[in-house]
Each structure stands twice: as structure tokens, then as C-alpha cells.
Length: 318
Image (cartoon, rainbow, N blue to C red):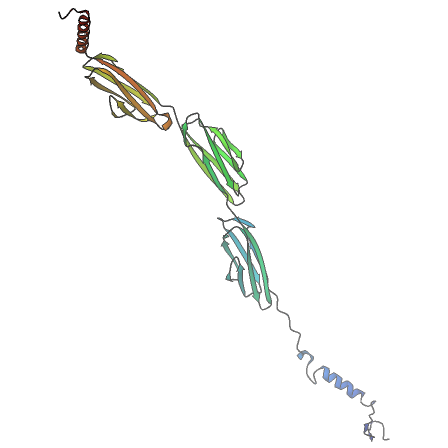
């Protein structure tokens, strides 16, 4: 064996004196740790993860009538692009505001997807479209005799409250469906009905006109006399639309007037006047009769009667 610190081959085995090599091994280890002569600060640092994008999407309402509008507002951070889908579509900026209206009743979902180098993020909001209320409001008759009754009937859909107005007996809250019998006391009456629901409001009005009963007077002066007999016909009507003469006179006449006529034939002459009312069932008719006599005809009739009596008595002619 040699001296310490030396080595020799023995059966193909290397024998090393490790007591002398410990400083060398330590030096090699330090060299590896510092990169074999380099600076420790040259070692690559671990990479920092990129921030994930964030997104906020809000609707100004949860529910909206079909005829109204609402706002969608969104903003994102660490995003480079956004895309809309669902009830809206297309590319969007990373922050913005848009005004929308729903296209139909029910739920509408608005989704926004934003992406950046750190990933993607998605948000959705829903807005419910509300159907506006509808109203059917009817009256039994739009023209009645003053003081008569009319019947109002109505039905409101998609409404939860109704309010009546326009008359003393048609005022205040009322059901969304029903009927009512009312007295038409004024010359013109307007009945209103206003209904509201989650989807909005609706109003309707009905007009009812009233008329007074028609009146008509007709007179003839004189009422009898010998021909040729001159008479005056006088008439006056109220709450009528016009008058028509028939019988021994004719033509269309106004509601008030007079007419002078000469009767040349003996007999009973009838003068009829019919006046139409705003309500056809209320038409009025009056008739006056005038008796015209022929004095000569009366004398001739008296002579002929006497002659017949003398002939019957066998007296013969005078």
C-alpha cells in the first residue's frame, strides 16, 4: 500500500483516501450551487400568473312592460374583448351601457362573456317582459231617453285594479270584470274606466247622450165652415228632427210652422203630421179634422127631400 493520499489499482477497484478530498467535494458542491463560477442572482425566478378578468353586468329593472325600455350596464377588468349572447348578441366593448326593450312576454336572459390573457369570465342577468293590460268597455245604448238606465259592461285582462269615474253613480274602485246599471241623468254623459297591472295601464271612455221626450201640437182654424173655406194650420214640435205631412196636405216641414189652405170641396178633411225623434221609437203623430160644407148642396138636398115626401103623399109638384 502507498502513502495516505495516494491510490492504487487492486482487482480493478479504485481505492481513494477521502480524508484528503473532503475540501474538494465541498468546493465542488459550492460550485454547483452557484452555477460553477456564476452569480446566484442569475438563477431564473418562478413566473407570476396573469390576473383573471372580472365582470359586472346589471339590468336597471327585473321586469318591464313590453312597451318600456331598460338599461344594461357592464364593466370588466383585465379583459380585452367581450361577446353578448342570449337575448342580445354581438361583440361588446369591455365596459358600456345599452338601452333595450323586451320583444315578448316572459323571461329574457342577457349573457356577456369577456376574455383576457388571464382567462374568461361570464355573467348573466334576466329581465321579465310584462304584458300590458287590455280593456273591453261597452255600453248597452249610446242614446237613451233622459232618466232611463244604461248598462255598462267591462272586462280587463292582465290588470289587478280598475277605477271608475265620470258620474256620481260611476266612481271609485271597481272589479276588473263586471257590469253596472246606471241612470242617464244628463244631456251628455262620459263614463271612464282606468285599469292598471304589472305591465302598465289602460283607459277607455264611453259617451252616452240623452234626449227629452218629443212633443207636438197641431191645430186648424176654423175647424168647420162653408166652402170655399180658408183655414190656418199651426204646429209646434220639440225634441224632433223633422216633420212630414200626409192626408189632405203633404210635404216635409220644420218642427214649428204654419200653413194657410183653402178647401173647395165639401167633406171632412184630415190633416196628419208625423214628427221623427232622435229615438225612432219616440216618433209622434197628430191629426186634425176640418169639416167643409156646401150651402147650395144642403139646400138642394133639403129640396129633394121635400119633393120625395110630397111624392109619397101624392101631392105632386107645387
